[in-house]
Image (cartoon, rainbow, N blue to C red; front, side):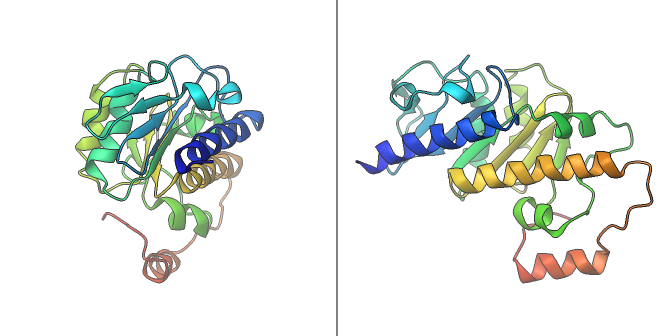
Length: 216
């Protein structure tokens, strides 16, 4: 099996895992990954994470031209913005995960640092998550908003919509976006309690020890 064929299978396997565990439903969410030749494999528009076909993924060449497969997700500007501004991005995942969306609706959430420091893992895998305002699904302005971050964030939360995470590869991106959703769920569970959060000293130790990107 070729490396691209393996990547196609991995994208579909991980997407189905996310779908089967309720992290995105129906035909929501989209996923993409870099190919060895600098192109992209992207989930097609209107498809379900639970039923992606490896042979029908949208295939782009290194110049951004669609060369094979079905038409891509309407959120391509969002994916392109991450790849264009983060040279380390090997994959991008966008979900409509329930708890992260719910947390984005809270009026007192920190827009610059969306997730409270409840566990070390979200800090290690995500750095600071930027809460972006609401955009119409498919609006190219979402990509412009990501570009405006100049590659300084690995993850954003689209208010009233869902998280978007870039990773070094498709497995890393999926693991990180799951951590985002888990942390949002913890934040909701702890809302109204005087929860013990990580201290600033704890956070700085994690940033230093794990070489975390942490835009101040």
